[in-house]
Structure formats: structure tokens, C-alpha cells
Image (cartoon, rainbow, N blue to C red):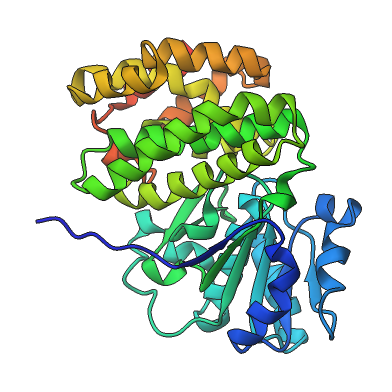
Length: 370
């Protein structure tokens, strides 16, 4: 039996950010909390969005690079103190995920960690949640159409809080908001989108529509990422990258795999603050080789899309885009690998990899990427 569900309302086009006040009003939000990060505030993006409202929304721009349970509680306090009635999440995946987690705790008792999927927290998520509009400013995570939020909990573990109820009420995808993204972030977030397309296509779960969307996203993203990095003002490339990002997330409803099982605990290393998309890019070639014996004809289909062996093509693309070639280049120490491998076994993406890895196999994958 296959259970297939899609998803939430999506508005996609250049210039849609100007309509955010109308979208908020349509969902009954009169006092939204604008959740974003300090970088977008410094660039003036936060003010530009907020000034479009007749009544300027309350802003929380304290989202960390890897969102934390502590930051969720800080934003929740602002939400309650300001008597907000909904959330407008603006930014990359970190801000969107933090906004989702705040929204959950408006109507669910903390701590947030009890709702993590690996802690059996899916069933306790129930009832109505306040409206949430998700507005991506990067083309990578696809969190605007994702049913989960990945948060570094107070115990140091990076865990996914996952439920269909976590889906935003509305995703507003305006490629214009991605035009100013620097080349290295365009590359890193773009590889995150490609990782989603690749992993969800390889996942053994039965969902042919998701497989088709994943392949379409892979074709679109692989064809556009070089242009988007080389010429960030190319509107067609930016449109394609944001669409590929959204499609990757639409597809990963069927599950991700070992790349994310490893990148989540690596991203939780507090002393390094590693970028999630960059980690996925570095890990992808080793995981693709590991999965090849288990995915059958899917390897040939990926080879046809990429124009060669998938592991080699992704490694070459990473190099072409100027991304790190190894975990050691990112600052990961060899003595950290064992703990990461152990944590990967507990990640919510572990069970949907096409070839279930043992702890020793995770260590081997990490050494290969090291």
C-alpha cells in the first residue's frame, strides 16, 4: 500500500513579496511575527518586507545559522508578548524551520524536543496551529513546502520535528529575493536542493509522483546551478533554482537518506557551525557510491540525467562550483567522526536510505568524505 499526499498552497513568481500583506490578511493575520535572521536585516531585506505592511509587524531576527531550541523559545516569547496571531517566516531554511517550530509551540507545550520524530513525537502533534507563510530567500532547503523543522535541541542533538500539520499554510516563492545571494551561498544551497532530489529519488518508499518530481527538479537544478553561481542576476537561472529547490522538498516527503543522516549531526557540532548544504555536497559522492548496489536501474536513470556516473559528476560539480572537497577542509576533526556515525543511526533519515548503513559503514562513509 502506498500513501501519497501533496502538500500545501504555493504562489510562485517574481514580485510576489510585495503581496505579502494581502496574503497575511487573507489568512486572518493582523499581527504576524516576522521571523528572519540578522543577515537579512543588515541587507535591508527585513525592513523592505516589513514596510509593505500598514502596521509594521513585530520582528524576530535572532535565527542562528543552525536553528536552536533556545532561539525558538526566544522567538516564542516575542510572539506572546506582542499578541501575534500568525507567523511570516522569511529567509533560508534556518529561519523557515525556526518559524515552524515557534508556530508549533504556540499551541503545544514545550520542550520542543519531545516532538522530534525519533522520540515518537509525531502523534502528539495535533489540533490547529496558527497560520504560517513561508518565504524562501535561498534556493536550497525547500522548507517552504516541507513538513518538518530541523532544530538543534538543548541536548545538542540536531533533530527533525515532522508532521503534516507542520506544513506552512502558504509558500510564497519569489525568485527576486534570491538575486542578491552571493556565489558561494548560491552553490551551497543549490547543492542542498540537488541532494534532496537525489536522495528522495533513491529512497525505497513507493511514491512514483515524488520520483518524477525529484527527477524533474534534478534536471532543472543541475542545468541551472552553474549559471546561477556565475551570474547571480540571471533571472531564468534563479527561477529554475528556486523551482528545483521547491521540487526537491515536494519530493522528500517520501524520505531522505544517509547524506542527511550524517549532515544533521555534523551540523550540530557547536564549535564549527557548518553549512548544511555544503555538508550535503561533500557527502554526496561517497553516499552515491554506497547506494549504487541497492538502487538497481535508478543508477542508470541518474547517469542519463547527469551525463555520467552520478558520484563522479557530483564530485566534479562541487569542484567546479568552488565548494570544499572534504570534511577536513571544512574543519571537521578526525576524532569527531565516531560520534557523528553513532548519531547518524538515530537520525530520522536513517531508515529511508535504500541501503541501511551500520555504524561502521557510517564511519567508513565519513572517512571517505574526510
